[in-house]
Image (tube, protein in one colour):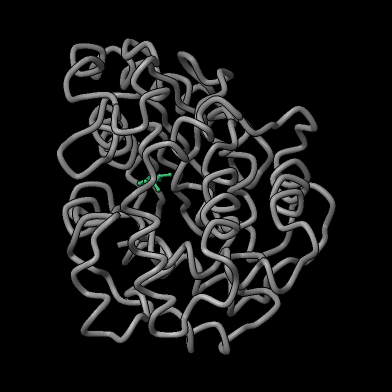
Length: 306
Ligand code: GLN
């Protein structure tokens, strides 16, 4: 088995190499635009406790929207179905920062993995925890076993300087009563959490939670009920890759979440977690080489939830 996955990762690395610099690094956050585009990493963590890595898998990068999974777990594990009074769980079919559906739905975002939805989740966390930013940091450190995970303040400040669209979304939702805290406080917390840096290794280890039925496999602590975990995976499957979620299901076929930092993390329930990172993005804001690498992984390993 060991050899099989090592060989698969090597084959993937050589096949995606020509793609690494295709696409475009996210530069709407100026600090992210400075990242060297020529990087690729991948990590696989199996439920049997094996880990396989290749490329820049230990290098930390901005997790951005992948953080939306961690904030959702913290809110959902406390509120359970009450959470769905404030945020929907349907794919949006629109860009991750879109405003268009908010008016029809009276300030209830389509799902927790687009910006509007994640901002509502952070608003909820501000009411649940005294220091939600620290709570998320503590949570990802515990899940990954890496105490050094940090917030890149340069990236946070750079995004805050041009966060007009997120401010607009948040004020709009507040006009419907779906944001309870001060708008700047919510945006600052949301942006800080997006600016957490983790590596492929950290992310794959963290996502063992979702391949292990909602239990932290490293210390046996139950975080989500089995049913909640199943539902988290369902939401990743249907909403995890913005407006290319259908294409991702077709090509890759696993629940996953992406971020504009170029990371993607996925899970094969009861089997393994897989992460990739490569900064150049396609038109929908997902890592171009990362998607191809995951497509090849599920093809060569003959793994998929379908
Ligand atoms: N912080 C980013 C934003 O709000 C996250 C977007 C993303 O990763 N898709 O625009």
